[in-house]
Image (tube, rainbow, N blue to C red; front, side, top):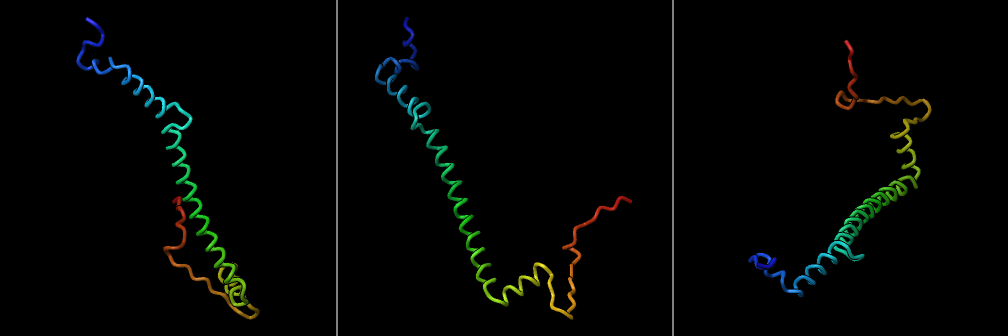
Length: 108
């Protein structure tokens, strides 16, 4: 009674099938061009493409801001909205709504 007499192990008696299985396992996991390596590269590629799109969107926003700041009205508007600057003899009222104010913890 041999090792390959079992009906499940009989196909492994063929040397070509054994070589094919070893070759497939080697190419999938151990080779320099393995499936795992390519999968990792594809994941990195997707991440880099996402970053590329993100930075393109950021560049578009920055270009829009530069275009707005290239005019005198744009500079004045940005100074008033972002830095609360004002002209002489002018009053500024900052209106904050209740839901926009950070909740303070009360230790009572």
